[in-house]
Image (cartoon, rainbow, N blue to C red; front, side, top):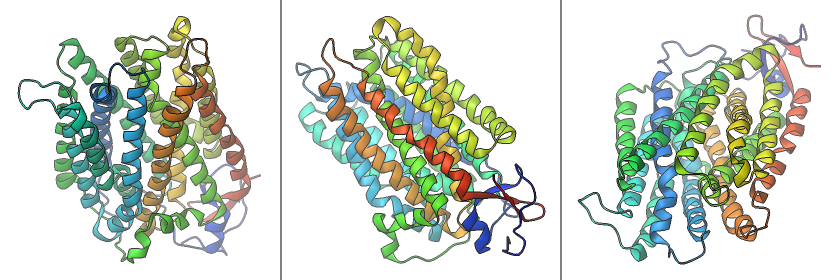
Length: 461
């Protein structure tokens, strides 16, 4: 317990970063991981396998959209349709985000994770059937596929965001001090998995198979995750009952208003997610249509991003945190993100090779999300971690809904003609993340440090 009496200023630069309100109220804080806590590797492996599946599917979703839209229509039609599918998935995910969080607080994280993976199985199997056959099970007619894909994307959303239970589970089995770094390990596993997913797509393309094979691989991995979760996850978090009113997505946002520092963390999470979704939802289309990048080059770029991001999350983040502070690390991440989007927006077909140089900035920026989420987990008790991750999922899902629509329906169609500034979509992303630097600066006034050995407050100057 951190009490008001034990909170006093002693030294600067060490101890556990917490909001001043969190320290002064004396709420219970679990410094160390729970006794007999299970290892974290099953959670990291879950993140990796899900991301291989996601990468294999994400890099072929545009092929699905091209197959069901009229090829004679303007080239951006498939991208526009893809943006709407993402929005459909996001809207349905928004409906259940807080429900998944509070239900997992009562019944455990495993059922919520299994539900999310079952949703992906349905979604990816359906998408695969909309592509040319591999010799069995014919291709769904494009007219029917347009409707069916909206339904399958909706089912995946309603089954829940896998990150809610994954991040809640990681927080459950971690101490407050190690949680941000463990969230970074999840992020590192994610980006490496995405890179491996791109290799799946490259392999399918090289042997000239239908891209349906990529979705079959993705589905198999999601099924494997279900087995992993059932066998290796072990729920240790204290359970709590909930009222159905708490499952309301709007009602769930109150947890992000716990204190001023939490509001800042929530803002940073939303800004990073919104800009990221603008980028990832358009990157395939942008690189092939505007930068004239070949598929092998695009896959190589994604692989380089994955490797660099893994190094940044696994090594650079802990180094910067130890050498400087968590807040300074967040500032570096947001500055890198903004600079990357700005530089990427200036690339042209003749300079597209520079994407392999500036992508390091995007990799450094990948630190922002897991760092902000990890710091937010310190502000609440173990019983509330599911509700917190449900609220975080709402922010992430809102960005997943609106960012692709803004990018694909509003910006790209207005800047897709020869002679126009194609990079406007990424210039907007750069402008969106820039205020994050100011919010990070605000954290210096809102937080203090709790010396974990002696439970004393270390004021930040």
